[in-house]
Image (cartoon, rainbow, N blue to C red; front, side):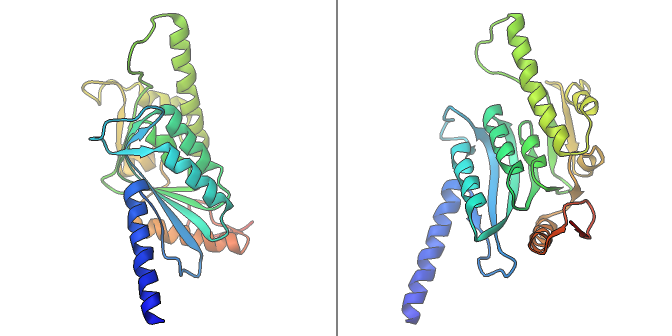
Length: 246
């Protein structure tokens, strides 16, 4: 009997390792009395409709979206932790991930580690609560498009529509206002080869994009408190440490 348990444990660990390697996801402590936490990592470049080279670290949105749907439908998973260290990537794919995260009924927390640049910003703010480590960075800049661009007014109108979708989403999920966000996007004195702004750690919090500076310990503790409050019918989604009755 003990040998069977040992074999099952080894098999489970191997499956977990394979899942981390292939999708960057894992379900944390399954014996937690507060409920399971599912970990999703957004790393490298967010891959959209076209495959990137094998030399690139990518997050594939076709891995993330089905997982989020399964999480929403799962009785076992009670919360989601999103780790971000991304240079950005495909706008449509990034917004799709952000919209899915924001519409989950279960508590969600994001943690910006190395960086959450470009389309990583909407993903970072899409959760119920967000953290950034002191050395974490966020690069905010206008939409770019690679490849051939037709130089007609309709093209620039389309660019503006994409930009409005991004700024609208970000502003509706954090406390920064649209005017300030657009000013950060169009800043010319920060980036030497581009327009935009780099926010580091505490500055992202002061600007109203991220809720709090903190690491993995605070992120998991916050998520556990939100799960506990959710189970007892309380509201623990504010910026303070306490919970109020819903």
